[in-house]
Image (cartoon, rainbow, N blue to C red):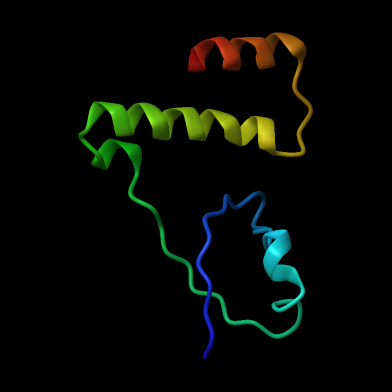
Length: 79
């Protein structure tokens, strides 16, 4: 069995296969789901800050529309 690992966010039950793997993994595949530790389980402040920033980006990366005000607030929150 050949395997690759990548991080992804589930959006309405859908997980997108990264572009670089689509050609080789476009037909029959086996999926194993592993839940990442939640940000509450991680104690290091710098790591928690990075996780929080990544979680805020979920809305930006999703296909849901965002207003300019929301985008501005998200950007300012990361600075």
